[in-house]
Amino acid sequence: MNDRDTALAPGPDDAAMLSALRELNLPDRLLQVLLAQAPDHAGEALLDYVGDLTRAGRIDQARRVLEVLRAYPPAPDDRQYASIELVRLLHHSGEEQAVAEAERITAELLSPGGLGAGPAELLAEDLEARGELADALRCLNLASRDLLAEPPEDLEGLEARYLTALIRRSRVRAQLGMELDAHDEVAVASARRLLAETYGDVGEGETRTEGSEPDRDAEVLFSRQAFDDARTRGLLPHEVAEHGADAYYRAAERNLREQSSERPETRWSVVLHGVAEIEAFAEHTGMDAGDRATALSWSEGEIAAHDPRLVPWPPQRNEACWCGSTRKYKKCCGSPSNR
Image (cartoon, rainbow, N blue to C red; front, side, top):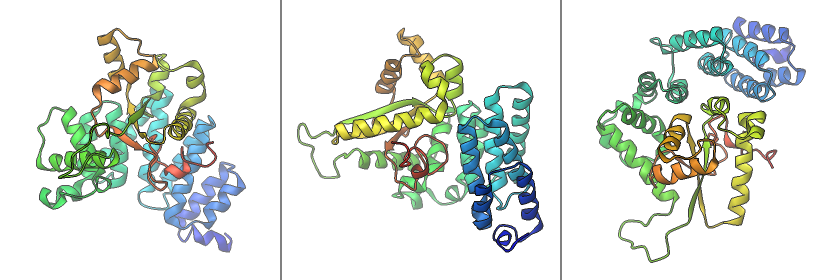
């Protein structure tokens, strides 16, 4: 081990991780990046590389890197994040044995002590997309544990960005048919306040003059968790299905930029939806579930102005990307390379 190795590998587990990664014949540039990273950033660099492999269609190699990260996590949460990403890849493969392995890993994550708050919120997103709402709620209860320990009145007035887990918890509880509790009411009020600020609603004591309502529009897209199902069901155009989810969202980002430049006064949002709600809407209305107009009609009829599913666009550069990749916006759809 050379002197630079100590930046990543002060202990035997990190040395073992480096050794295992070298056996995968990873690019020298990646190993150099890892050697220069502090332990708490090395896992993030590897997860970014896994994203690159996945976008390139090198799924087997991505899975091998994730297995190494699971076996030798340089920081405590890295094993959990790697496990969640591996579960996604296994589910997307559709292979019976792979799906069974994904379920085993998920059960491991859901076991007592298996999840930290950050990974729990991320896993909840996937579980909700798969319709596993009870387990999603378990994760969101864990992710918002510190917030739930606070009296609801102490949380009133907090910005929505500090309450994301609580807001998602309220949404899942609503889907399960549960009555709002006091923390749900705080979460919903915070989400509504964010949307009101984003869309320029009038403040207290003001009156809106006729014609002053800001123009609003939304890009309506399948969620990342629903993309493969939508592709399998033929709900995506051939050219979109062929190039994959990342190309789908990057193209949407470019369209949003173009539309925003042409209509600078319009306040834009993104709505990510699943397959079930679009198919149900199409069946009810007699429309084609694969027609973009159907999703737009669904959004116009089902998504109210203060719906938490409306994600303001664009996010701040250091915030999570709107597409659900878990990467920062500036490193994902908001990257300068996506022009």
